[in-house]
Image (cartoon, rainbow, N blue to C red):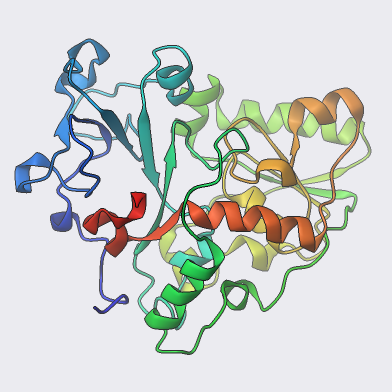
Length: 305
Protein backbone atom coordinates (compact mmCIF):
# COMPACT_ATOMS: atom_id res chain seq x y z
CA UNK A 1 0.00 0.00 0.00
CA UNK A 2 1.41 3.39 -1.03
CA UNK A 3 0.60 5.83 1.78
CA UNK A 4 1.93 8.86 -0.14
CA UNK A 5 -0.46 8.60 -3.09
CA UNK A 6 -3.44 10.96 -3.06
CA UNK A 7 -5.81 9.48 -0.48
CA UNK A 8 -7.75 12.73 -0.29
CA UNK A 9 -9.53 12.31 -3.62
CA UNK A 10 -13.30 12.64 -3.40
CA UNK A 11 -14.09 9.55 -5.46
CA UNK A 12 -12.65 7.36 -2.70
CA UNK A 13 -15.56 8.24 -0.39
CA UNK A 14 -18.07 10.35 -2.40
CA UNK A 15 -19.09 12.26 0.73
CA UNK A 16 -19.87 15.97 0.81
CA UNK A 17 -19.52 18.29 3.75
CA UNK A 18 -22.46 17.90 6.06
CA UNK A 19 -24.35 15.28 8.08
CA UNK A 20 -24.82 11.59 7.24
CA UNK A 21 -26.67 8.80 9.02
CA UNK A 22 -25.56 5.20 9.50
CA UNK A 23 -27.83 2.45 10.84
CA UNK A 24 -24.97 -0.07 11.11
CA UNK A 25 -21.64 -0.36 12.91
CA UNK A 26 -19.75 -0.43 9.64
CA UNK A 27 -17.31 2.45 10.03
CA UNK A 28 -15.84 2.50 6.53
CA UNK A 29 -16.04 6.10 5.39
CA UNK A 30 -17.98 5.78 2.14
CA UNK A 31 -21.22 7.20 0.81
CA UNK A 32 -24.16 4.94 0.05
CA UNK A 33 -23.66 6.11 -3.55
CA UNK A 34 -20.65 3.78 -3.78
CA UNK A 35 -21.87 0.97 -1.52
CA UNK A 36 -21.09 2.47 1.88
CA UNK A 37 -23.48 2.78 4.80
CA UNK A 38 -23.38 6.56 5.20
CA UNK A 39 -26.56 8.15 3.85
CA UNK A 40 -26.94 11.88 3.28
CA UNK A 41 -29.36 13.37 5.81
CA UNK A 42 -32.31 14.68 3.83
CA UNK A 43 -32.31 18.49 3.74
CA UNK A 44 -29.81 18.35 6.64
CA UNK A 45 -32.89 18.37 8.88
CA UNK A 46 -32.52 16.54 12.21
CA UNK A 47 -36.19 15.58 12.08
CA UNK A 48 -35.36 13.38 9.09
CA UNK A 49 -32.94 11.14 11.00
CA UNK A 50 -34.20 7.53 10.60
CA UNK A 51 -35.25 5.92 13.90
CA UNK A 52 -32.85 2.99 13.42
CA UNK A 53 -29.79 5.25 13.11
CA UNK A 54 -26.77 3.94 15.03
CA UNK A 55 -24.65 7.09 14.68
CA UNK A 56 -24.15 10.19 12.56
CA UNK A 57 -21.15 11.40 10.62
CA UNK A 58 -20.39 15.11 10.59
CA UNK A 59 -18.01 15.76 7.73
CA UNK A 60 -16.11 19.04 7.90
CA UNK A 61 -17.83 22.42 7.77
CA UNK A 62 -21.44 21.33 7.86
CA UNK A 63 -22.70 24.60 6.36
CA UNK A 64 -20.33 24.68 3.41
CA UNK A 65 -21.75 22.35 0.75
CA UNK A 66 -22.56 24.81 -2.00
CA UNK A 67 -25.06 22.49 -3.65
CA UNK A 68 -27.49 22.92 -0.75
CA UNK A 69 -28.71 25.91 1.27
CA UNK A 70 -26.38 26.51 4.24
CA UNK A 71 -27.60 24.71 7.36
CA UNK A 72 -25.72 24.80 10.66
CA UNK A 73 -26.34 22.51 13.60
CA UNK A 74 -24.05 23.29 16.51
CA UNK A 75 -22.07 20.07 17.12
CA UNK A 76 -22.25 20.65 20.87
CA UNK A 77 -26.05 20.64 20.75
CA UNK A 78 -26.19 17.47 18.67
CA UNK A 79 -24.82 15.43 21.54
CA UNK A 80 -25.52 17.45 24.67
CA UNK A 81 -29.05 18.56 23.75
CA UNK A 82 -30.32 16.09 21.15
CA UNK A 83 -28.38 13.15 22.66
CA UNK A 84 -27.16 12.04 19.25
CA UNK A 85 -24.00 9.96 18.83
CA UNK A 86 -21.78 11.24 16.04
CA UNK A 87 -18.26 11.04 14.73
CA UNK A 88 -16.64 14.22 13.45
CA UNK A 89 -14.25 14.03 10.49
CA UNK A 90 -11.94 16.92 9.62
CA UNK A 91 -8.28 17.79 9.10
CA UNK A 92 -5.80 16.48 11.70
CA UNK A 93 -5.14 18.37 14.92
CA UNK A 94 -1.45 17.95 14.06
CA UNK A 95 -1.38 20.12 10.90
CA UNK A 96 2.23 19.20 10.10
CA UNK A 97 0.94 15.90 8.70
CA UNK A 98 -0.52 17.83 5.74
CA UNK A 99 2.67 19.77 5.09
CA UNK A 100 5.09 18.65 2.42
CA UNK A 101 7.83 16.35 3.67
CA UNK A 102 9.18 12.83 3.27
CA UNK A 103 5.94 11.53 4.82
CA UNK A 104 3.80 13.52 2.35
CA UNK A 105 5.89 14.63 -0.66
CA UNK A 106 3.02 16.30 -2.54
CA UNK A 107 1.27 17.83 0.47
CA UNK A 108 -1.86 15.73 -0.06
CA UNK A 109 -4.70 15.73 2.48
CA UNK A 110 -3.91 12.15 3.44
CA UNK A 111 -4.41 12.55 7.18
CA UNK A 112 -7.41 13.46 9.31
CA UNK A 113 -8.95 13.39 12.76
CA UNK A 114 -11.98 11.35 13.80
CA UNK A 115 -13.48 12.33 17.15
CA UNK A 116 -16.63 11.21 18.90
CA UNK A 117 -19.32 13.69 19.98
CA UNK A 118 -17.16 16.80 19.68
CA UNK A 119 -15.16 18.51 16.96
CA UNK A 120 -11.80 17.78 18.60
CA UNK A 121 -10.15 15.48 21.11
CA UNK A 122 -11.23 16.52 24.60
CA UNK A 123 -10.57 15.44 28.16
CA UNK A 124 -14.26 14.46 28.37
CA UNK A 125 -13.77 11.49 26.06
CA UNK A 126 -11.98 8.47 27.56
CA UNK A 127 -8.77 7.29 25.89
CA UNK A 128 -9.39 5.15 22.84
CA UNK A 129 -8.58 1.45 22.76
CA UNK A 130 -5.74 1.93 20.27
CA UNK A 131 -2.25 3.34 20.21
CA UNK A 132 -1.54 6.93 19.30
CA UNK A 133 2.16 7.67 19.17
CA UNK A 134 3.31 4.16 18.24
CA UNK A 135 0.73 3.76 15.47
CA UNK A 136 1.39 7.17 13.93
CA UNK A 137 5.13 6.57 14.10
CA UNK A 138 4.72 3.28 12.24
CA UNK A 139 2.63 4.98 9.56
CA UNK A 140 5.11 7.82 9.18
CA UNK A 141 7.98 5.37 8.86
CA UNK A 142 6.11 3.43 6.18
CA UNK A 143 4.99 6.55 4.29
CA UNK A 144 8.48 8.06 4.30
CA UNK A 145 10.32 4.87 3.37
CA UNK A 146 12.05 4.89 6.74
CA UNK A 147 13.16 8.53 6.62
CA UNK A 148 10.84 9.57 9.47
CA UNK A 149 10.69 7.37 12.54
CA UNK A 150 8.92 9.60 15.06
CA UNK A 151 6.30 12.34 14.78
CA UNK A 152 8.66 14.70 16.62
CA UNK A 153 10.71 14.84 13.44
CA UNK A 154 7.94 16.50 11.43
CA UNK A 155 7.62 19.35 13.95
CA UNK A 156 11.31 20.14 14.12
CA UNK A 157 12.85 17.28 16.09
CA UNK A 158 11.76 17.70 19.70
CA UNK A 159 9.21 19.18 22.08
CA UNK A 160 10.05 22.12 24.31
CA UNK A 161 8.66 23.78 27.40
CA UNK A 162 6.48 26.78 26.60
CA UNK A 163 7.56 30.28 27.58
CA UNK A 164 5.23 33.26 27.87
CA UNK A 165 6.18 36.58 26.27
CA UNK A 166 4.54 39.98 25.93
CA UNK A 167 3.67 39.89 22.22
CA UNK A 168 0.42 38.09 21.38
CA UNK A 169 -0.45 36.80 17.93
CA UNK A 170 -4.14 36.55 17.04
CA UNK A 171 -4.92 33.68 14.67
CA UNK A 172 -8.54 34.15 13.53
CA UNK A 173 -10.49 31.38 11.85
CA UNK A 174 -12.54 31.79 8.69
CA UNK A 175 -15.33 34.39 8.58
CA UNK A 176 -17.89 31.57 8.27
CA UNK A 177 -16.53 29.78 11.33
CA UNK A 178 -16.77 32.87 13.52
CA UNK A 179 -20.25 33.60 12.17
CA UNK A 180 -21.73 30.16 12.79
CA UNK A 181 -19.96 29.19 16.00
CA UNK A 182 -19.74 32.58 17.73
CA UNK A 183 -22.13 34.96 15.97
CA UNK A 184 -19.21 37.31 15.43
CA UNK A 185 -17.39 38.77 12.47
CA UNK A 186 -13.64 38.28 12.25
CA UNK A 187 -13.22 41.98 12.93
CA UNK A 188 -15.35 41.77 16.08
CA UNK A 189 -13.36 38.77 17.32
CA UNK A 190 -10.08 40.63 16.73
CA UNK A 191 -11.36 43.76 18.46
CA UNK A 192 -12.59 41.81 21.48
CA UNK A 193 -9.31 39.96 21.96
CA UNK A 194 -7.13 42.98 21.24
CA UNK A 195 -8.90 45.18 23.76
CA UNK A 196 -8.40 42.74 26.64
CA UNK A 197 -4.84 41.80 25.73
CA UNK A 198 -3.67 45.38 25.42
CA UNK A 199 -5.32 46.18 28.72
CA UNK A 200 -3.22 43.35 30.21
CA UNK A 201 -0.01 44.80 28.78
CA UNK A 202 0.42 42.71 25.62
CA UNK A 203 1.46 43.97 22.23
CA UNK A 204 -0.90 42.47 19.67
CA UNK A 205 -0.32 41.27 16.12
CA UNK A 206 -2.85 39.66 13.77
CA UNK A 207 -2.09 36.80 11.39
CA UNK A 208 -4.05 36.58 8.16
CA UNK A 209 -4.80 32.97 7.30
CA UNK A 210 -2.62 31.98 4.32
CA UNK A 211 -3.84 29.85 1.44
CA UNK A 212 -3.56 26.09 1.69
CA UNK A 213 -1.00 26.23 -1.12
CA UNK A 214 1.23 28.53 0.93
CA UNK A 215 0.87 26.31 4.01
CA UNK A 216 1.73 23.19 1.99
CA UNK A 217 4.70 24.83 0.32
CA UNK A 218 6.23 26.00 3.55
CA UNK A 219 5.88 29.78 3.34
CA UNK A 220 2.73 30.10 5.43
CA UNK A 221 3.16 27.66 8.29
CA UNK A 222 2.28 29.11 11.67
CA UNK A 223 5.22 27.64 13.56
CA UNK A 224 7.58 29.48 11.18
CA UNK A 225 6.01 32.82 12.12
CA UNK A 226 6.44 32.71 15.89
CA UNK A 227 9.76 34.53 16.25
CA UNK A 228 9.36 37.07 19.07
CA UNK A 229 5.80 35.82 19.73
CA UNK A 230 5.04 34.95 23.34
CA UNK A 231 1.37 34.01 23.14
CA UNK A 232 -1.03 32.73 20.47
CA UNK A 233 -4.80 33.23 20.57
CA UNK A 234 -6.63 30.72 18.37
CA UNK A 235 -9.94 28.91 18.12
CA UNK A 236 -8.45 26.03 16.12
CA UNK A 237 -5.39 23.87 15.52
CA UNK A 238 -3.16 26.95 15.62
CA UNK A 239 -3.21 26.71 19.42
CA UNK A 240 -1.72 23.22 19.41
CA UNK A 241 0.75 24.09 16.65
CA UNK A 242 2.03 27.02 18.70
CA UNK A 243 2.36 24.96 21.89
CA UNK A 244 4.36 22.35 19.99
CA UNK A 245 6.69 25.22 19.00
CA UNK A 246 7.04 26.40 22.60
CA UNK A 247 4.49 29.24 22.64
CA UNK A 248 1.52 29.09 25.07
CA UNK A 249 -2.02 29.59 23.83
CA UNK A 250 -5.41 31.02 24.72
CA UNK A 251 -8.43 29.21 23.26
CA UNK A 252 -12.21 29.01 23.20
CA UNK A 253 -14.40 25.93 23.40
CA UNK A 254 -13.38 24.30 20.13
CA UNK A 255 -9.57 24.16 19.98
CA UNK A 256 -7.78 20.77 20.14
CA UNK A 257 -5.10 21.86 22.62
CA UNK A 258 -7.09 20.37 25.51
CA UNK A 259 -5.51 20.80 28.96
CA UNK A 260 -2.40 22.44 27.49
CA UNK A 261 -4.09 25.73 26.63
CA UNK A 262 -5.81 28.33 28.79
CA UNK A 263 -9.46 29.02 28.10
CA UNK A 264 -10.09 32.66 27.24
CA UNK A 265 -12.72 33.04 29.96
CA UNK A 266 -10.32 31.72 32.61
CA UNK A 267 -7.66 34.19 31.45
CA UNK A 268 -10.11 37.10 31.61
CA UNK A 269 -11.12 36.12 35.15
CA UNK A 270 -7.76 35.14 36.62
CA UNK A 271 -5.11 36.80 34.41
CA UNK A 272 -3.28 33.44 34.47
CA UNK A 273 -1.86 31.72 31.38
CA UNK A 274 -0.74 28.09 31.50
CA UNK A 275 2.76 27.31 30.21
CA UNK A 276 2.84 23.54 29.71
CA UNK A 277 6.07 21.59 29.91
CA UNK A 278 7.32 19.29 27.16
CA UNK A 279 6.34 16.28 29.28
CA UNK A 280 2.74 17.47 29.60
CA UNK A 281 2.60 18.15 25.87
CA UNK A 282 3.89 14.65 25.14
CA UNK A 283 1.18 13.11 27.31
CA UNK A 284 -1.62 15.05 25.63
CA UNK A 285 -0.28 14.31 22.16
CA UNK A 286 -0.62 10.59 22.82
CA UNK A 287 -4.35 11.19 23.28
CA UNK A 288 -4.58 13.49 20.23
CA UNK A 289 -2.79 10.94 18.05
CA UNK A 290 -5.23 8.25 19.11
CA UNK A 291 -7.81 10.29 17.17
CA UNK A 292 -5.47 10.94 14.22
CA UNK A 293 -5.53 8.71 11.13
CA UNK A 294 -4.15 8.13 7.70
CA UNK A 295 -7.14 8.05 5.36
CA UNK A 296 -6.38 4.48 4.36
CA UNK A 297 -7.51 3.60 7.90
CA UNK A 298 -10.84 5.41 7.65
CA UNK A 299 -11.69 3.93 4.26
CA UNK A 300 -11.04 0.41 5.57
CA UNK A 301 -12.97 1.05 8.78
CA UNK A 302 -10.03 0.01 10.95
CA UNK A 303 -9.89 3.49 12.55
CA UNK A 304 -12.61 2.54 15.05
CA UNK A 305 -11.16 -0.87 15.85
